[in-house]
Length: 118
Length: 103
Image (cartoon, rainbow over all chains, first blue to last red; front, side, top):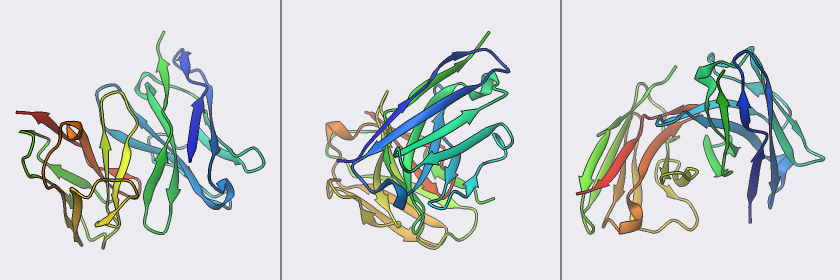
């Protein structure tokens, strides 16, 4: 079975940094693009970043220049480095494997909560 | 950027009802539309991809249709476990969600 396990969430002050990890198992990690999607409390889903199998990265304008996605195929893990955090970044962060041929998020982790507050 | 607009934002229904949710893209996305179900406190779950392909393990009462700009998710006969919020998605853009509540 596919498993995605996020970790690294927590409470951070505005302007601070945090690194999230997502450990994958049950599928050929190196063959899939990976993504992060977040959900602020009581709000909808927002795509945050993606990384292709070859390491090309993509971001929406809301996080570009502040967030960095990376992957380690040897460890079957994808990371999200988040810098210059603001209160608007408070959310549950989910990782997902992403199917690029038909543009969908296949399996999802359980999420990790990031709270930005002083 | 392509915008995805869902309607309605919420609906009330009873067990056994046929439920239809629509999603409109601001320009043609061919059939690259997916649907997700999210229950309170849980991660989203893929239901439909490619506008009409049922994800493995998803009950056949769920179906998707449409192409171009207009898409539909249909639940043929609502079951108690189906009350949730549903999202459409194209690429990096999600619809705003449709909450299906008990009538």
